[in-house]
Length: 172
Image 1: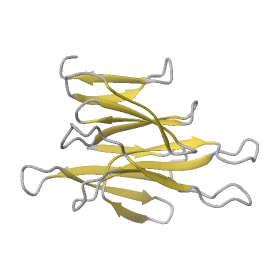
Image 2: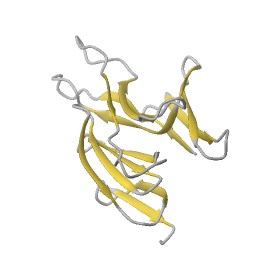
Image 3: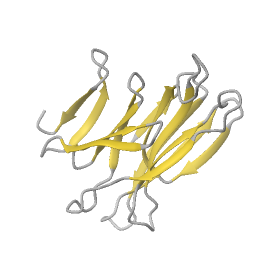
Image 4: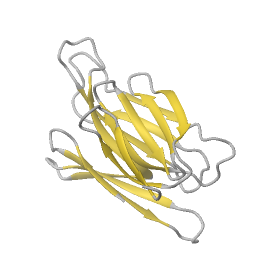
């Protein structure tokens, strides 16, 4: 489904979808640390990396892995923000999670695309049914949620012109 590498090229992730019953879509994510050849398996749908300043140390940027999790046996979904490198001197590793606030009238929706916008310290999450969520990383707060289109979005990438996203749906 998706693949990503952090800015240091030491961490990467791979996401795959599956369905046991042809009705519910589930996902597995492999987070891999290349230097030590270690992996962690997660029940994740989408992910991204972000280098953002989360401490008072001038010029220090924390390497954050962001991912959306939905365990197969649960109905709730969470977004996680966890530091994967060394924390700032004298600081604890950053780790937060918050439940994704899906609209109550949307059944079976799940995150499919995730991009960080480091300039603003936010993460964009786009779901199968074309909802856009914007989360602020340092406080793990939902800033915005809006349905973008009635057509399914199937690919998105960072816009190099304006720190946003370019999305392509079935309608174009």
